[in-house]
Image 1: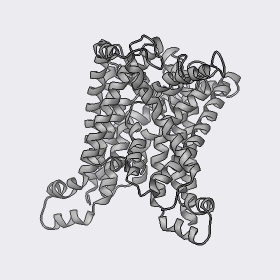
Image 2 (image 1 turned 180 degrees about the vertical axis):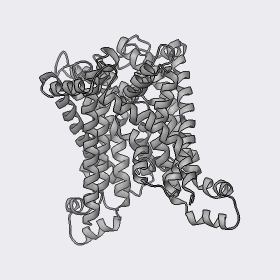
Image 3 (image 1 turned 90 degrees about the vertical axis):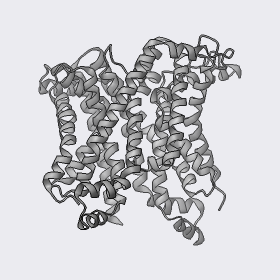
Image 4 (image 1 turned 45 degrees about the vertical axis):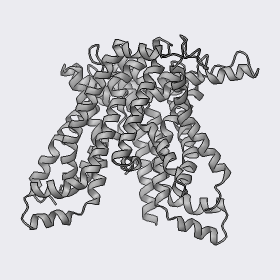
Length: 276
Length: 265
């Protein structure tokens, strides 16, 4: 135990200074009163964005892609995590490592793969043409599908390891007990395993959604200018046109979206914990 | 063990296909002899690897990325470990607020952090971009340090430290001989995660780039947009090889799964 409050504060001080002066204050200033722009102008711009069809389309696309990717990551990630957590095969360790490994690899590298797969001379297009299904093959790159695939690849490892730790904490004997009492495989999954790993599943959904609606590399490379999302739009305002009011308004939408999802997930997890 | 449901196996298989297959195609196209990003590759050669390692913007950016990742990792550990000790072992007022503050860079979108730093430090205070990058990278690494070393520290019994103190050890000695050995795996995991996170970062490095100091992922991203040659595939394959070596080293030192156990807690 560190008994002296003064020592604890000294240990904490460098971090506090860095985070308050380097993140919290700059972020609040950027969101509410960027250079040469008044707070009123930011909110004015925000109001216009929320009623402009072009901007609303970007917001709606970001939400739609975020939700689709979250759904896909859970549908693919939970079964993977479940199988890995319940398997006694020694291959399970290797497969778990294989699912974790992409987290270490650059987003640029992982996303670049889809250019090869979906590009003009890519594998999928050539296969479609080769099989005579369509000639020329339909445009695959710079579509919403490409962005969804790229983001699913990016966030699936996160969904798998988050669900994995949740499932691993659920006593496997409970599954066995439910089966022993006559519940079928689906019934056991729906009424025992999934409810008990719900906090982990909620966490996985939150991390994936927050990551997907703020990711930059993937919509930039795979969506191009046709599939603009909030993140690529934010960069356009801040790195290209230097429109600070629009940048702050876009950043506000993104930040509020992420904060709402985090608080919802915390509230759900807390309510679960209390009701047990 | 009962047979696994075929539906679950199919979904898991699809998941692995989505995660892994695009990466394999990057490697395959890197070895092409042709000038375009086509599959199957036209002939076999190492010319794009040669091109990648002799392309000055890539090599310079690689050095910059390594430099930035190394320094910000050291800074994040130097600032984060004492903070973790204070949060976990100290009697602080408003502990949950402090904890929330240390995790906040994980929740705030990185583009928001990057833009905030760009406006306030590079434009307003006219700070150079390397120093601004160090602030940004160190800040986003702190949550990893605090979580991962915190998870290690949670396994250590504070009573042991008190016992060491009771037996006459100084606070420093008890930290050095009792607490630190327990923290070591956490520190190694935090260092590895921090290094990789900084090295791979795009949003902050993108907004804080300058002509003199650009990181490798930002340089590659920029190149992809202008050219369609396999040089980026070759560079990506080299990065993949480096990452594989790092992963094996991590597995040797600590065990892979243990390193990532701390991420979500």
